[in-house]
Length: 276
Ligand SMILES: [Ca+2]
Image (cartoon, rainbow, N blue to C red; front, side, top):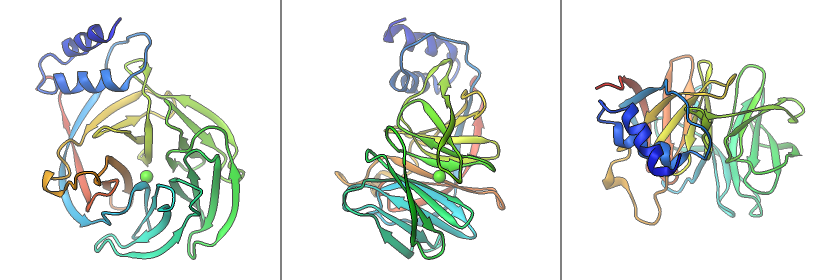
């Protein structure tokens, strides 16, 4: 099946939907080669519940919410940092800069620690959650992109279609799963968030978030966040892509932002039937 056939195939599947072309284009853009399969996919739009300030110079690579605060990591060599941030004001309450030789990527909390990874250095770090002092470092193969966790495992993306599972104590890989959308690999999985039994993943260079069944790797939903950041907030040459998902399970609040975005949003997901 060539690319034109793929687009036509998915266009037919969503033929009664206004999302037809959008979803087909997203799928054609994001998927690698492979066999086709039947689609069973929930589609979501969003409603903005609250808008908060966000450091427009924070090239967001990792984001999570814990005990009333946001924790954020930023990337780019010489600009990478780990931050504790006040949600309401966006004020950075604590910051640790990462050595300029490293391009910071995802972070996740585990107990009283923050685990962080870097893009292409194959080097991760463990920091104290309270004072950000470095406790240890570790290594892994390949690239480091996003991190999140469930109750027992740290979950890591590396830019491919795979999610890796790490032992939270040894930080060694214990397994992995290939993420598939309609039976084909979905590449460029970036920032991650564990939300009520599923992994949400930013798909790099898109305004879409994929919801992934961590057991099978199947994408069970797509969240369309196009239009979230108003055009008037885009700074040409500076504002970058959607990236950064945090979830507060106690209040069921979902937060999203982007690289160098001046705003962070609490959003509510709205399921859109495929035939409307
Ligand atoms: Ca996250």
